[in-house]
Image (cartoon, rainbow, N blue to C red; front, side):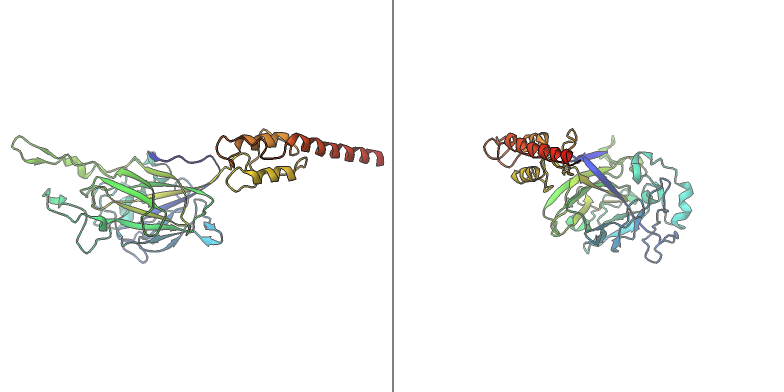
Length: 370
């Protein structure tokens, strides 16, 4: 698995699985609300997970793997399409032509081992895919590979396929896991990129994935170009590409683009979205994402009380105490990294003594009344 970035330690996680192909649940190629040669993943799948089988080009609200609608701040999480998109299943991870019959008829012959793909290793999800939008300039899949003749194919940014994930939670971090597989394309590598803005200018992550066996460009004894005949069937069945630690933009969206590495079509068969709630920093007692003087105020106001203090050091227990001040001081960043807080805040020892004295007197008074 290719990995970009580093996820934070987490206290909660939510998974969403997306299949880029949809047979409207009945295996009919290009059926109502279905994609060309597409098939839906059965829900639940063999792992007990629920999927979102999308017909590329259509807006779709999303559910997580427990079949629960994903809602953030009262708004549904959705997948929407920004560019045109092509769909197909021909020579995806199935590894052979699928131009006759229905997708469901091919499933019994799908013997490729997808066990290394984790949650995405389901044959119906690997079978179909989304690809380039077929721009006006012509097809962007490269040379005419059927005849092994190198003729020009359209190559350029117009081949990029774009969609967005709508209605994400700004308080969460997101990991996107991509699976692409296809042989009949001049670009063996697909580049997946994520942006925080609708203009696709602020890139926040990118990763490459070989969707099929690269074509060796070599020459035989006579100087003729030689193409490895195995490249047609050697599709990707065991590798994923991951971009992690992503935050949505101000509009709560993430914008995704994929394209062949040299500008021909890219391919995306399935994707997993993992939303995590980062654990807060110890000492961030007002839970605003930083440890500063405001957290000292929270500590002071609850000193000696039995109170649920956000982001409290797990080693501290019982009423709020001097130990919680020490935890705050050790993580304090309000005056700059490594800065001393001596003199910037009241000396806690005097406060602690006063509070403990009050608590002691209260206890004596209660014992006297009893």
